Amino acid sequence: MNKLYIMCGIPFAGKTTLANEIVRLKNFTKIDLDGVKIALFGESVEDQQLQKNDWDRIYQQMYTHIQNFLSQEKTVLHDTGNFTRHERSNVRNIANVLGIEAITIYVDTSIEEAKKRLEANRLNKERFDISDQAFLAATAEMEIPDESEKPLVYRWEFPTEEWIKEHII
Image 1: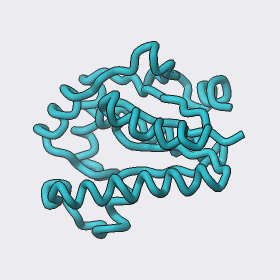
Image 2: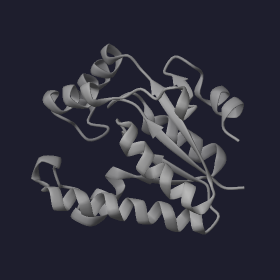
Image 3: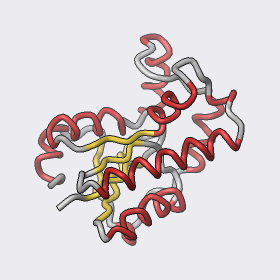
Image 4: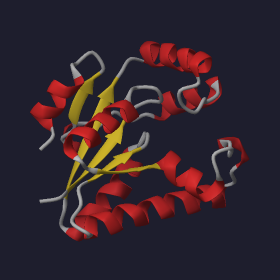
């Protein structure tokens, strides 16, 4: 039976790294905000260039992709920050309407560790950079999922493959 996995955590927590490993091991369909943004606006687009209506378009397209793949009986892994309960609820509602189980995965990484990764990324440029201001805003906005969301918690020190085999069905 297909499911929807909803990733959440602060920037540079390791969400995408974990998501990519889950996709590799489980062959799920990954939908991520950055991928949709690039598909709509190109690889060189910067977040600060986008207006509210651009972001609305990105999110609507992302939600449509999630709904379409779930409707095709595929398990979907939604890889974006999902910092707030409201954001996670919006995604969860797509699964609920389709009668599909939604599972939140909280990637629990300290702000200090995430900040180190952000700084390292500025040197190696392995992924998009974000400003210090955006990093601080996102960490302030982060609402850690509570028991009502029944999250699976991945701590950044856990062996990734072992954790996936134990928690992701």
